[in-house]
Length: 175
Image (cartoon, rainbow, N blue to C red; front, side, top):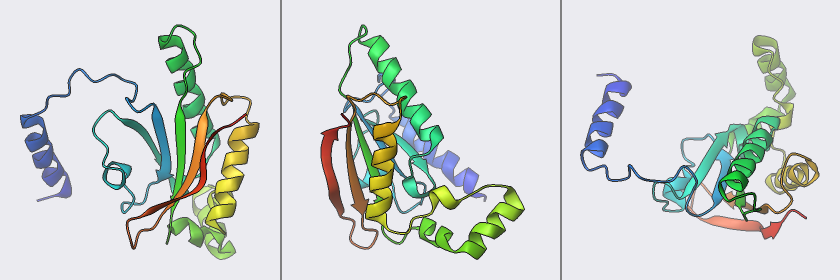
């Protein structure tokens, strides 16, 4: 049996009692979480989220990239339009984690091998120090003209050994 078969069987069990057909496209907690794609880091489990409560964006290292900025900007405008043109407070959590594979991207030999084989420059995704990279990402958001200044942002680190999340930067507007 393939892993796909296992997942489809689990989906059948999920769909048997599915009662969430009327959920809004916008998250009920007005929250977006940016985190790493690492399989050990699942915000639905970490924060005990119900379906429809938060938008979760996952990428290498949970880093703020141009694509992430585009997602944040698009969601902000969509919410603004739905709310009759009013700036609606929206929260963004930037969450990295301990023992992240992006820490390996600081190795120049690995970065060069990835660039050589794929053409992808992983340098912007490398994490030398989580606190520093989260500060950099926060500043990237703060200086981006595409990101609404009324967005509330916090930074956190998830410990994959303990399951605990610690806040580095408490929630504050970007202004």
